[in-house]
Every structure is written in structure tokens, then in C-alpha cells.
Length: 111
Image (cartoon, rainbow, N blue to C red; front, top):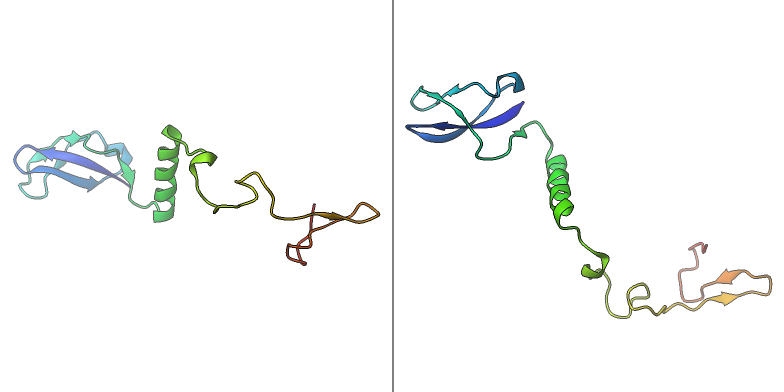
């Protein structure tokens, strides 16, 4: 159920959980019991949304206006084969054309 903001003229702003069908209707102030109109102080959010989903939505909103470029991300250190342009691995080819990487892990499968 969504949570909406209301602005009481006497007590100030408060939030209240209401069904979507009643979103435009005024609500009674919990302090002074007077009717308060709905105010658009923040965007409505769904209180039952999980924290992970809320974080994903917030991340998507941020990345839509200012996406990160790969050149901005410093994920690898100096001398990295993918970032520095030089590969530290050496590739050996067999007589039949097979490739092997003597400096890499022996259990990895090459392409």
C-alpha cells in the first residue's frame, strides 16, 4: 500500500499509508484531528517493497541521468591486461593449433 504526504495547516507535514483509490482525498491529521490536504513533498513509494528492490530502483534512477563509463571505473590495478593495453599472459600454440596459457591456472578452459 502506498504512503502519501499530507500537510496539516496547524501541525505541519505527516505521512500516511492509504489505498491508491483514496490518494487524492484529504486525510485526518493524527495530532489535531483536522482534515489535511495531500501534499507533494516527496514522490509516493510503496511501503511493502523490499529493500533490495528499492535500492535497485534508486540505482536505476541515478544511472539513467548520469551513467558511469568504463573509463571512469578504476576496477583493476596498474599493469592489468585488460586496462593497460598489454597482456601479461603469454600464449603458446601447439603444432596442431591448440592454445595453452602457461602462466594461467591449469584448470581454466581457453576459448
